Length: 188
Length: 331
Image (cartoon, each protein chain N blue to C red):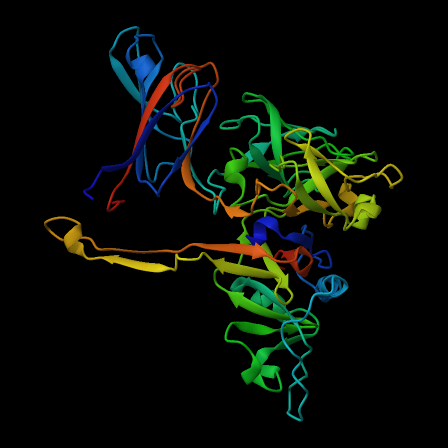
């Protein structure tokens, strides 16, 4: 839903010659400024600095939702703080990779990728940068999710194949289009 | 469910263009029967097309009248018959992934507001299909999806919705990819954002989108116009849509005094193009709620007035069946 409907900004600060380019600090700063200008609230509070070797304070932050294949490129961005460098790593989420400026990145193996859609036919990675309550998933009243299992006996007399599935009814909604921006990037 | 169970079937009357069939689940095989040509004996008319999983996109096994009799011959679509190879047949579509067809070479592209791209292969294109080019000198268009029209078989297709300014250079060798046969397949959710090809400085402002917009009158959109596209006064404005054509709509915005809009030139790469983002609607009928319309399906190819494809020619009655196998054995 976000890939189809949210506005996007291409990364342009990189040097890989593509459009969009790989992600850079300038691109992150641009997105943060965009969300700030649109009065989006940050989702996470800051993590205060502590006197621990190798750590750094973490700013209050919006979330950037992206693919696990982005991790190497995130590591290379100026100012990247991996979550093990947080003063209080227990405040990091399980799926969190780290933070850059006012953006904390959550990664997933099913993060959004638009195949061969850059100018040089590379895969484009969509990083959905969201502020608080930018979008919501609304479950439909009276129709909660169902997990359905049919044992093999329903398949036939030889009971060879079972089937498993689920169904649900929910509506994803962008609650404020100004609070979610898709930062499109390619890999370095 | 036993092996080879038909999970869906239907029929349609051909209009001589590719036909998209939405299926309720993934399938492993599909057959089409041309009831019109089965009853006839015209040489080269195809009567049955067979597709099964693992065949490449566009292929099928064809049964056709090899002579002016009821005797059938069979051949693959790629090989073809009667001097026509690459007869477009079955193209599986999954709107969550798209891109089921391999890249096809482009040999040239004109420097015009509606560039014409030369290619030796135009199947399974039809007017309104959505493609993407890349690898050529049109670096400002590369990677952007656009609707096509003026398809000259095995010769060229044209960018349908005119850009504000020509790309700036002549395109050389590159590639194009078939993204979707129509708007319905194009995106999982609708209405979707669109890249802007042009905005007029007029009252009301008229917006042209690279891919047909699919909006309804009464939709509310937000215009996102980066500095590189000119008309920065339009950036961030909300407007109510009045549909003019499939590719254009007007907004209740007077842009007469705005800076002229331009489509960025290759020198501007990398850049973020101007876009239009739907954010709401004023109609009481909820014409365009954001909803998931993804599906799995098959596009049946066409050669227009030439028979020998699953859709036959205009007026042919086509029956089809599709089904599932429990296992696929590949040596």
